[in-house]
Image (cartoon, rainbow, N blue to C red):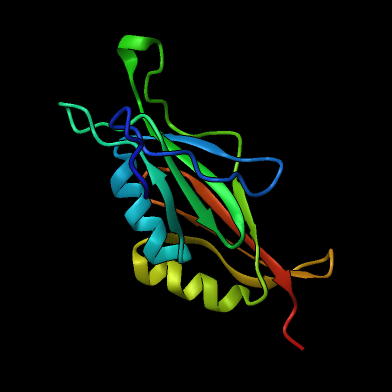
Length: 141
């Protein structure tokens, strides 16, 4: 993380991928640490926390793609809401290994790795922030 000489905000990191999830959680810096353990995420950049410990932006790289996080800022019209109606799916080469690491990091398995009708292997997990993560990859032969 490189600090900009003109502010406390870090320089922006290059965005990887074309559809980038931006997830609001209660504790973006803690979530980044969880995703480091669960998904081998790298913190590309992060704004320092404010006086309440909230950060407005964390940029992660997970498996070659960008994922961005923020704490809620209800005073600016950005309240914390329970995640619903979406999941973040990671395309991986070894669903079982990724699933095992995520469970060891504290995510809850909602679907064990399974060979699916569409020809891939798939698993699903929920993190402590309520975000559903899917893991999709080739079947084990």
